[in-house]
Structures are given as C-alpha cells and as structure tokens.
Length: 267
Image (cartoon, rainbow, N blue to C red; front, side, top):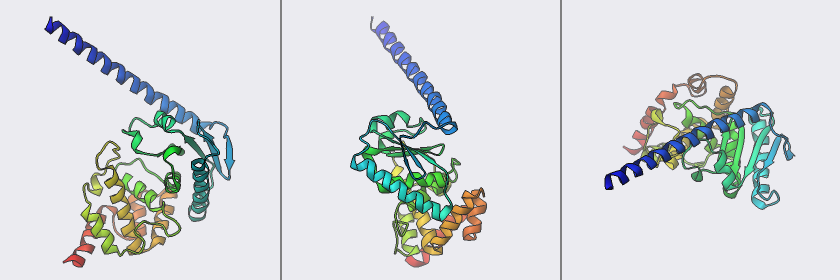
C-alpha cells in the first residue's frame, strides 16, 4: 500500500512538473508574440508626452509615482536626444506590480527583484517601485543595448552610470584609483564571465561592478569618452572596435588595466 501511494505521489509530482513546463513554454511564446506584435504595430498610446507614447495598466495615472516617472522619462529623453540624437517614439508601459510580473520574460527569474524592463525597445515599469533613476536607466537601453553575454555588463554599467544627473556617475569626485580599488574589492565575478542571470545571489554586485568599470573609464579618461563610446555603438560599430576607438586598448584588457593602475596606489 505504501509503495502504491509513493508511486501515486511521484506520478502526481511529475504531472505537475510537466504541466508547469507546458505553461511556461506557452507563456514564452505568448510573450514573444505580444512583443513582436507591439514592435510591429504598437497599440494606440493613452497619453503622448513629447516622443513618449505612454500606456497605462490599472495604475492611477494621476498618482505621484506615475507623474514623477513620466517627468523623469521626459527629462531623460531630452538628455539622450541632445547627447545621442535619440528621436524615435518610445513605447512605455506603466504597470502595477502584478501586471509587471505578467510581462516579465522567462529568462529573468525573481521578477519581484526588479522594477523595470526593456524588451525590443519597449519599456515596462513597475510604477509601485519606480523612481527617477529607474526611468533614466530603462530609457538608456533604448539608446543602446546588447544581448551578447560577453558585453551585457557594459550595457548595464552604462545604464547605471547615466542614472545620475546632471554629473553622471555615482562616484563623481573619486579618483580612478579609488574606483578601481572598490571594483577589485567587491570582485565576485569577472568581466569575461558576466552572465545576465537575475536569479543569481550576486545580482546587486553584477550591477555595481559593471558600473564601477564604467566609472573607472569616465574618471580616468573623461566623460566625453563615454559619450563617444555610446555614439560609436549607437552608430552600429561592434563593441570591441568601438571600445578600442574610444579608449585605445582592447575591452578584454580592462580588468588588467584596472589592476595595473590600482596596484602602485596601494603598494
């Protein structure tokens, strides 16, 4: 009897796993279909703010978080237009936490840990956790982004760097050696093995380290070099070529440069 019960429990377990897998696959195809359809023929916007086409879920569109997010997006758009020639209309969905969880792609685990998402040039924001720097971060991904796992860190590092205005960068005033030392001190994963894995316990370190590497470049070479890099990437140049053109050495040597720079400072 115990054996039969065990078999039945195991059978129910595997059936549940199969049903869950089928549901996840169906959700993936639905998301892809919706994203492709939205990219090809966006839904009519419920509000136009400059070049931003705003869509609302069930959120109170007159609430402070909604108004603050829209204002931050509009300010960031003008900033990126001036710096990088951003001119195309941007589709933005301002959603509740529940709605945001429904559109969060399958390749991102623990969607409750993030507040914004840009897929196919379309921005999705959880208004319940939104703020001005999140708006700037997600909008930057419409300026330039990559899905190449080798350089995904650069995409996120730049997006974090552009969150802070008007000076850009969270380590403004720090010396390159201080930034490099901080980057080496929190080093948990190397640049060459960064992976876009939201389920990782190192999620916060991923963003911090990516940003610190951009901070190092900005503090050592100047912010204009960062702007040049983004414009080269935005113009279609591949990452290794654009990086070398902007900074004069291969992107694969960035960690070596940082180590070599900070070692004499702490010896």
